[in-house]
Length: 294
Image (tube, rainbow, N blue to C red; front, top):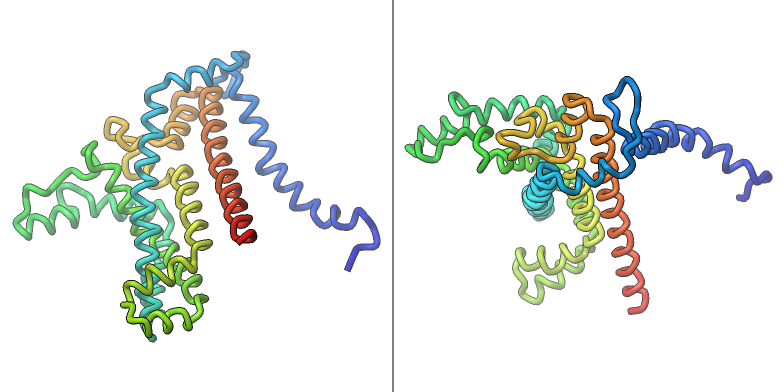
């Protein structure tokens, strides 16, 4: 049913648009403006043009933070998306009794990330932590590490925690998608002699391609926005081994009181995330056109 007045749809959308403008657009525009300034957060502002962006281009710590977050994203694509997909496959293969299993796997998602970080800090503790204690009891003393204090293991330890938390989240997404796959496809494959493993990877997984693409996008964009686990567990250490753009941004603005440089960093990070979203939408549209022509 069409509205009688042209302005009616705009009137209904106005509250949401006002909130979006106040909470998203205004800070974004302000941050963009600050990125061209040299400002400590108080006192006089000095216009410096693109100097902050030029400095970012030559900042080795900024480059290292992006390398770290890319490695983290690659690890979480395995520990979150792939593990979540496998868990969803195991659950859908069961004929019943999977409710509590799903609840148990999803439970970490409902915990505050700060609480999760504090709990895992005890698990990784080199003196009385669960991991080192288990290794000692198994006679594997040489395997013990200062997990969060070793530059070689700190980033992977945080990735493991992230996988423990969010694999259940992706499991729920993929479980819902797999539940919609017609049972006739699996039955036909079984009649052809396919194993359950082959049915899952060759029949069910291709059928939930859209859900997989969304899950991968969520994992990648969420990785760039990660902060709390890194801040609580290592705060970017040791020796910047777990420094990522968000921890570097917070340190630059709140510790170093360099609002202009931090704003430039924020704009670059925002641009990367927006670019990923645009590329994803373009890829989806291109694939949809291919399917339509087929």
